[in-house]
Length: 205
Image (tube, rainbow, N blue to C red):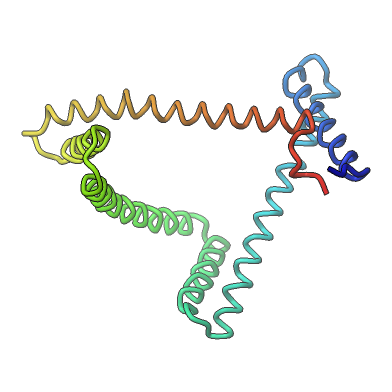
């Protein structure tokens, strides 16, 4: 495996920046210089992310404007996207309060529609699962889905089911969510350690 001078330089710069940032975040109250260096690196990271988002938006608009101009298949959806983007930008520039109200209204409507589709997706998934093979995990999944759906109904006769549903949401579901977050945190730490020791090659030429 070839490991050229450019790759070695990229690795050295990445490791140095990573260590300086970690030291500045951990020991910034004792070493003001490292705290300032870490702050500069974090600001550069934020600026880079912002520029990346802007470039992505410009690229997205250019692709859809080109599609509308050439009248390709699905150009109507590209036209709607461009008009919506323009309307949001203009409304935000004219009146920010109305723009935020419009955003919240559209977002709530979309989230409500997705929540409604989630119900059918869960039911269809349970049907496909039981049709393919009946297992204990499949029965548990269907029972949990039915319990949550019944507990969400605004009926006084289902108050015991609602209590069980609240317990399921607060204990097992919360524990699963925290487990997923812990897995993400551990994966982030492992990735950071790989970068610090030069094992991650994503930044090499």
